[in-house]
Length: 325
Image (spheres, rainbow, N blue to C red):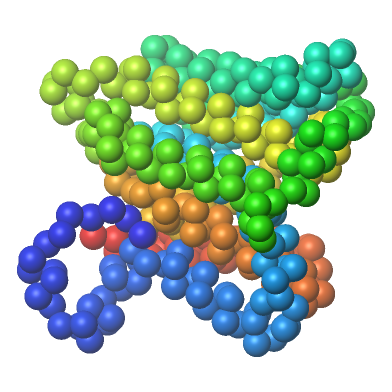
């Protein structure tokens, strides 16, 4: 669901003609796909639409939503963060190490966010200042962050028996869990930053045409460092949710979150070439992917086939993206 300028010529096109336009469906792929999945799984398994399952689904989606928001900023700047899942894992291990060292819950969470920010900032510096391709930089930091997690943990998961984190992942305000509220707040703040601040304007200009943005006086290097740092910070926040959810810091890389974060962004209509996108689109994309996996699990589909289904949807979204206006 890419952000587009309202075009009177487009608005004047009859609805029936717009429905035959592939570009229309490309812009609304995440929303249409989410509705279709809800309808299909709702019919196939009544449990899917139960209140308990919806609550669990939203809590499960919260972590991916946070990662997708961070990835959206990077991709809108015409970059990509392949290290986002490994950064989350590394930050989670830092949290576990700090907690085991007696830092307490609050300081351990702060340490996780700082660790994520450090990885992201390093990515940004290498991309913006050292002029190394984002693909190479973040692929290298993917490996480095995974290795850092294994070295710091000794390859063993570490229990984090924090009552605060347990209450955070199980608590709620009414039917809405705290992780869902946290993800929603982050998405709203990101939307405001993207569309209501000068930084958002500079972000889209940098992603749209880096050289033109520089000629306009925009410090594009600073923008890139900022978006990678932001991605790292949100990976650190997602690490807190990960640890609170499983009650331990697990050093095994959660690489599925890399694919899914990129997939959510693609489904959400953020241009892989930069310069265009929204925050709401990736949020809907994350909900779509989580709903798909949830529905397949309820139907008893093997976990071996679930990544295949995600892959098919991502390829379809990438195909539709060619027609985005």
